[in-house]
Length: 239
Image (cartoon, rainbow, N blue to C red; front, side, top):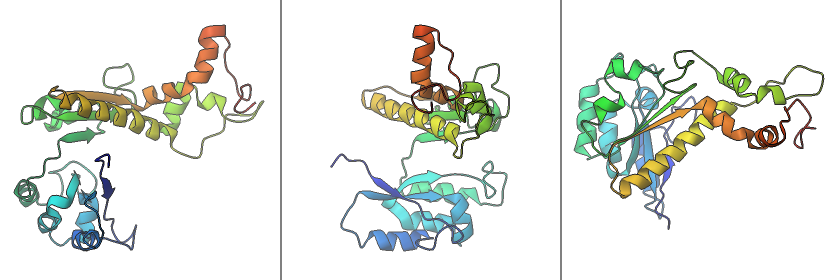
């Protein structure tokens, strides 16, 4: 009713035994009494399951809602064994209109590859382009490599996790990854709304570290209002 489609992604046989190819997925969706489900085609999985990726795109046709372009090794398109020319022709042939780009290269890499925001917006004035990195595009740490644990430590969240008089506990899930995805999604949804109001090409700089800071609202409030420095096991959540 809200006009928001559900998405199904055919995975390779090593990750799922349900639906692995575009043809199988199209056939299955045809048995459902709904037009609100679309297909996400990921070239990583298509490289394993589809004998002809371009033909699979044509088979998906109007059901193709999202397309994930990545090299055969999840690397940069063009530096692999995938034949990209017929794939691009197939996307144009079905009039695929996906125009939200999400990239996660280290700052500066997309520009070197010629797939940065300033380059791509020349071809699509309505482009929405989201860069998700660890530390943002223009910070003292922008060029540094990082992992979830690094971002948790720098945000202060790691120092709040664990038991009193013991070392911080390493969290069992990738909090920073999800934090970056959340602010990226919020940015993209806002940009989509703005586009409906006439705003043209928009760029979103989403940093995982920034996302983690937003999780510190309670302990941050205590610090800024009462100058109380938080410590392990001294708050309402783990004290």
